[in-house]
Amino acid sequence: MRPILRIFGATPGGGPLARFGRSGVRGKAKNPLTGDKGAAQRPRHPSSGSGAPASRSVVRCSSNGGVGGGGVQPPRFRPRQPSSKSVTTRGGKLGLTMNALMPGVPLMAQSLGGAFVIDMGIQLVGWAFAATYKTEKFYDLCGSLAFSATAALTFASSAMLPRQVLATSMVVSWTVRLGLFLLTRVMRDGGDSRFDEVKTQPGKFLVYWTLQGVWVWVTALPVFLINGIGRQSPLFWGDYLSLALWVAGFICETTADYQKYKFKQDPANKGRFINTGLWSLSRHPNYFGEILMWWAVAGVAVSMNASPLVSVAALASPLFVTFLLTQVSGVPILEKTADERWGNEAVYQSYKRNTPCLIPKLPGMARVD
Image (cartoon, rainbow, N blue to C red; front, side, top):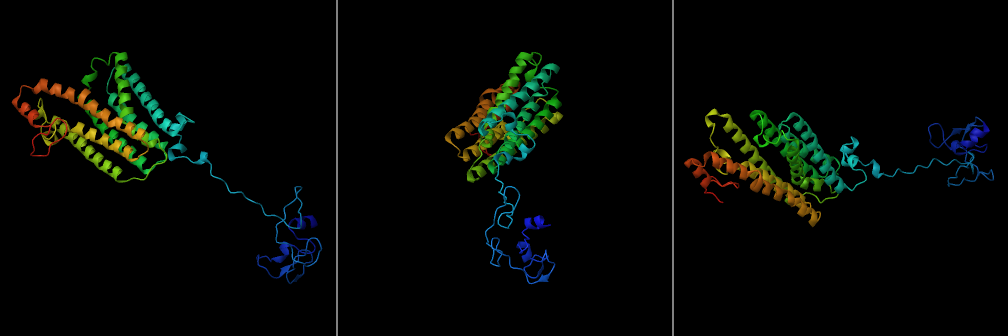
């Protein structure tokens, strides 16, 4: 028993345990060696055996397990330091981050490069199916999927700051709404005449899919830039103004698409052009709404005030969308088609003469362009 008692400081002359009773309160206690009850024993000095008070200093245990100085040092715990490896986002816990695709690369490079790889990967898979089955029904769906996937995955790799939540929500909301609308339209119409000649030629068909991938990446560039910066200033009036413009653009595009869809559903309107609702204020209100939304998303990136280079890069998106829709694939094609179908009609000539091409006029006002 003596070695065991020595470990706990219960030496023949008394020790730390002798100062406390079972309740752990200083007072009368039972001597573990004699069994006598009486006044609490004052611990003896470990070297002289006298009743001198023992030192308050804690004595370390010897390396061989013995006790030095008649006392036991309580275990010392070193506080655990936080590790950067343990700090992960919610997406990181599921492995849904760009770091899994491009490990060891700076966050901005992961956001831009990872988004490009995922975007083009979706286009290649979509093209493979479309070329095999000679159909274009997957085209718009894959474009929407690329927008959503790249925005969501770059967000999962980010610090999930308020501005990143805002920009990602803008892009995902827009692309889900537009994707469902385009998919419904192509299923209703049975196809898209733009691809009638190329969907049977895999090489040329691939060019269309590649261009769609470039369109997705450049258009969504502001959100990739925002999600690629880990430290940002708080939201301020520039962000809220951009959000208000985005909501206005979203309502404009959604309403215009719905009005045109309902117009075409009416058999009485077969072969006619729409000139009611928002279409009485602009010949292409849906494109105006889309352009306004991407200027708003870029405005959020500029409000971040990260660097002049980031701000200029973010503006590439709305400039690209504006040029594409007004000079290349949107307005010019539809205007040419409309002129060929209704150009000789006086009603259409009056409509074209009095209705702005893009920026809506206020009700009752003449055209502003």
